[in-house]
Length: 114
Length: 237
Image 1 (cartoon, rainbow over the protein chains, first blue to last red):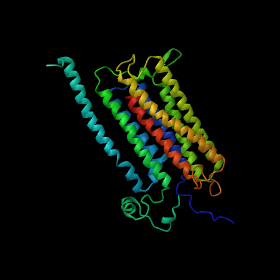
Image 2 (cartoon, rainbow over the protein chains, first blue to last red):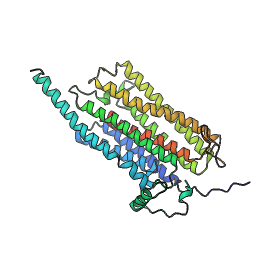
Image 3 (tube, rainbow over the protein chains, first blue to last red):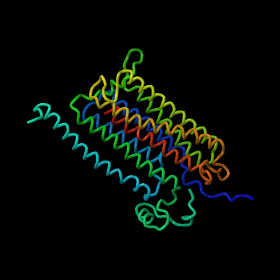
Image 4 (tube, rainbow over the protein chains, first blue to last red):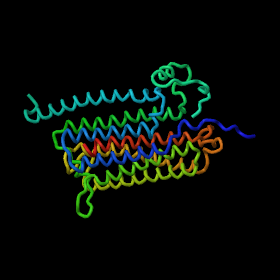
C-alpha cells in the first residue's frame, strides 16, 4: 500500500535569505546596544536608545523567527492585545514606586512616630 | 500545516479574516496546528510571569534610597588587567542570538523535510544553549565569590542580589529545560521520527511531524526574546 503524499508543505517555508537578514540585523542591533554602554551614554539618550534597540530586536524575533508576520490576524491579535495589560501594570507600579520613594525619603528625614 | 476542516475554504486576509475566523463555528486559529496554538498560549502566560519579575525589579530599584550597584562595573570582566564592561554578558547575548538563528534555520529545513540539516541545526542550537548556561554558571559563581547574596552585596542596594538571582535564575531554568528538549528532539529528528508519515511519539499515539520542530523553535525564540528584555533592563539600564 502506498500512502498518498499529503500536499501540505509550502505555507511555512520561506527563503533562507530572510532568516539570514534577520539574523544579521539582530547581531548588529545587539552590538549597537552594547555600544550604548561602551560609550557610556547617560540620561534620556541612554534610555531611549536602549528601549529603541530592545523593541526592534524583540519585534524582529517575534515577526520573523517566530513567524508572527505570516500568521493570521486571529492568532496575532490574541497574542498581542494582552500586552496592553502589562503596560497598564507598569504605569501603576511606576506611580507606586514614586510614592514609596517619596515616603521613604520623607520619613527618613522627618522621622516616624508622633 | 494542512487542516482537513479548512481545505477548499477560501480564507480572507486581514481584520476581515480575523472576524470571520473568530466568529466561525470551527477552529478559530485556522491552519495553525493545535500544538502550535497551545505553545503560543503557554508563551503568553510565561510572558506575564517574566513581566511580573521585571516590573517588581523596576519597583524595587525605583523605590530604594540607596544607590543601585553600577551594572557596567559589577558585570565587568578583567582581560589582561583591564576591566571590560559587560564583556561576559555581551558574549552570552551573541551566543543566544546565534542559537536562535540556527533554530530558525532548523525549522525551515524541517519543513523542507531535510532530515540531516534539520538535525544538525537543532543539535547546534542545543550546544549554543549549553554554552549559555555554562557562562551563566560562571557568572553566578563569580558574583557569589564577590559576596553577592539575595539579602546583601558589597556594591550598593541590598535588593540587587535577590532580583538578580531570581530573574536570571528563572531565565536560566528556561534555557536549561530548552537545552534538554533540544537534545531530545535532535535525537528524534536524526532517528527519523518525522519521516515517512511520522513515527508514534513516546507518550502519545499521534504520529510525529516536523511541526514539532517549529513548536520547539517557538519556545527557544521566546527564551531569546526574554533575554533581550533582561539584557536591556537589568544589564544596560
